[in-house]
Structures are given as C-alpha cells and as structure tokens.
Length: 486
Image 1: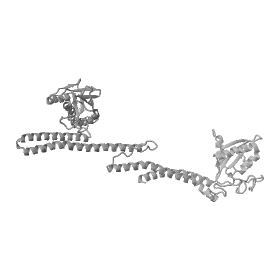
Image 2: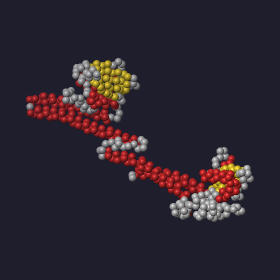
Image 3: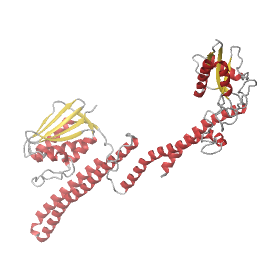
Image 4: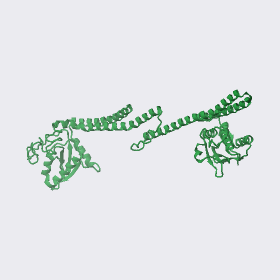
C-alpha cells in the first residue's frame, strides 16, 4: 500500500472515530449521571409499550389482583399503576421526577404510548407506566401471597431463575445455560455488553475506511504507473480497456484524459519524426545536385558557367526551403499573434492576384462585392493567401484561377478555385500536412509541399479554418474562413 492509501485511510478513520467517541462519550456521561443518582425515568422503549399492553389485558381478564401480581413480578422494568387518587397500586413511592415525566406525557398533545389509561371491571380508572432504573430493589409486598422471595414454582421456571422471580429468557443468559456469554460468567455480559456497540462501530469504521482508501488510491496508483511508463517512452493507451468503476467519476475521466494526452503526444512525436525524415529527404536532393554540379565543374572547366547556374538554382531552392521551414516552426511554436492591425482583405487579394498574373502569365479573376476588413498580422495573412493562390496557379494546368471574397455576417470566406486535375479524395485530409504532394511521380511542379501547411497554421492562429474540396466541374476549391473585424 502506498502513502496515499494510508493518508486516505487514516483521515477517514480519524473522522469516524472522533464521531464515535463524541457520541459514545455523551451517552456514557448520561448513563453515568443516571447511575450516580439512581433515579428512575419513564421508559418509552418498545418493550415498555408491550408491558403496558400486557397490563391492560391483565386488568381486563384477570382483575386488579392479577394486575398487582404483574406489577410485582416485573423485573426487566418496573410497572407502576396509579389509581384515581394518585396512589401506587403496590404502595411504592413514585419519585417526583418520574411523576413530572408522566404528567408531561399526559398533557402533551398527541402523546405516545409511554403512559396507558386503564379501566377496571368495576369502572375505576388507572394510569399505568413503565420505568427503567439503575438500582431496582426487589419487590416484596407483605401480606400478599406470592410476593416474597420466589422459589421454584409454576411461574418461576425452575432452577436457573435466580433471585427476584422468573426471567424473560426462560432462565438462560445471553450465551446459554449458566447466564454467561458463550459459557462465560454472567458478569462478563454486564461489564462488556455496554461496550459492544462501540466496538462494532469501530470495526465497521475500520472496514469502510479501508474500502474507501483503497477505492480512491487504486486509480491514482494506476495513473502513477501510467506516468512512469510515459516518462520511459511508452505512450500506449493505459485505460482504454479499463471497465468503468461503479459509475463514471472524475478519477475514471482522468484516466481517459491521460489516454487522450498520450495519444496527442504520440501523434506529435510521430509528426516530428516524419517532419525530420521529410526535411532530410528534401535537403538531400538539392545537396546531391550541388555536389554533382561542383564535380562537373572540376571535370569539365569549359562548362563552368552552366555548373554555376545549377549551383545558384539549387542554393535558391534550399534557401526557400529553409525559410519555409523556419516560418512553419515559428507558427507552430507561437502562443500569440504578433502585432495586429485592421487589414483591407479585398485590397490585399487584388495585389496578390496582380503579382500572380505578372509572374505566371495566367488569368486570375477576383470577385469581391464589398470591402471587407479583418484584424490580424498583415504579413502572415499575405503569406497564407499568396501560398494558396500560387498553389492554384501551379497546379491549375494553365487555366483560369478565380478568387472570391464573400462576407457572411461576422465571418468572411475567401475561395480560391483552379481548373487543374484536383486531388484524390483519399488525400484531401492530408493536403495541409507538411511536405505532402499529390502524385509526386507525375507532378513536375517545383515546390516542397509547405505552402498549404503554412497557410493552415496562419489561418488557425487567426481563429479561422481552412478546407479543400474537389469541384464537380474539375479542379480544386480551397476555402478560408476568417472572423471579420469588429
């Protein structure tokens, strides 16, 4: 068991034991006070109610003498019967405190069964009640047969009854013949019996404290093992096949959150490995061409000019690749946008279209029904839209490229449509991944597959979204959605 288990266990146990000590101590002090004063009190327990019902039946069927016998022979509790003048039937003194309790019960609205009204055959009325006292003197009413010290007789139950009349358990103690607990002497039950409820409560507290501590500490230990495994490089799901614990709780949800976190980390690490592999692959080709051009220049000095031109082109290509990688890296590591300002989106799109017309010599049409302003970093937004437009020009097979800017409430949609071959449906989800190029074996267009990845990061950084879909009439549709400036 770990330290967390024992912390839970001891905290719960101490809280329960403190409650038990408080309640048990209060009851013990009350009982000690009663034992010290020896004052009888009105008994309202179910046995007292049964005794009062028995007294009513005895008076009805046996008369006043039978009721007197019942009051004299009761041992577990004392049965008091008062006549109309307030005299006790056996001439026993009734303590003033007990009389006050009886009066309160009689005068209370809707009193319970602690006091019974009895009516004899002669029409006389009586008040009966039961009392339990710590010191119960033996009843001995002189002049009445059967009220002296009882011996073996029809009502006494024979041997084993002990002094004071018949026992309600037939002459046996709690543990069988002899009056003891499981063969123990009778004094054992009297001394240990009051402490048994407290001992049982302590044992129950131990059991439930252990169960609760185990219930809470088990998933936390499982999480600790999962974190240790993750620190060692094992990012496999640990709680995917774990059955739900009773009902779903926060600890179970924490395990599933750990699985989602580890899956995300695994995806990021796989992406980093794939990116490193792709960067190495992209750099290897221009480096190989550079080495070939340098070797050719050494072997054929007369072709030095052509070799220098090749070296220059490969250097520019590598410089562009490194620049795009740095841009992508900064976008992925950025937690906030650089300085932002209001950007006229229609004006920016017009300038990008003019540059594309001049460089590629293709028709680029812009459709913008009204001016639209967005709030963002101008350089990043320019780079995102320019990458998409240039990608459409490169892959549009020399056809027309349409760029539309359409306001839609609090949003604005920028659509770039080309007339190229489009992208295979299976690859539409990967088109914005770094170094992805559709059909590289049949596509001789220069590029590294980073333009759309950069555009996606820029758009997401500005709180927008980007998507790609094939057009029914042929070509690709790329849609950027950005929030409009307030």
